[in-house]
Length: 264
Image (tube, rainbow, N blue to C red; front, side, top):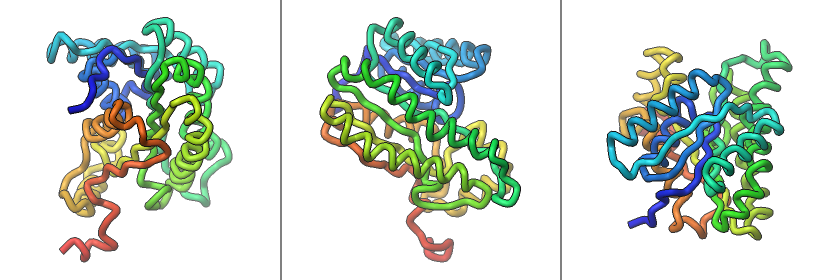
């Protein structure tokens, strides 16, 4: 039985849709007070209301979800979001660095602007978010940072996503060195590495893509956002307090077989 995280303050960047929204829902269901960020204010405010209402219908102990506009590629924006979260909740205990984009672009056509956009949001956004949150996480006494990386880049590759893969591998390099600096303040940093998870973004890749992915997963299905939320909740728990600079692959076994034939 894990120690309750009810009442803890959680910030989820990119929490207005997809995996981020699922992570926010998981923490709120566990009773945490959650802030989600994103660049679209109208969408973010609607999603915060939907999540809060859903939590209230599930249990009176469900946490509230609030929205704050934020752009992780802008250090000043990150600092503002953290300050507003601290003012709203009285502190910050858990930072989920989840904001990310995955546009496709083959190397022969990728422009410097396309490369910069992916690295600015996925990789630099992780740096800036952590830097902004450090004072509040130190004050918490048991700060937790959970990075949403990916199997793409650190373990596997996918044509057209070289910039995305580089950004996700870069997050893990950042995590390992950052862990050494953060440990002295009692802050842990770990990463969840999702495989193919059913989200709005994945659905846009088409039915053929989804069918092909299901066929390559030993468990025979795509993952859910709740699968990733559960991993994040573990890393945020008191019981995971002696774990830092580690990764947890959540992919239904996708990275295990060396070929489809190996699945039997």
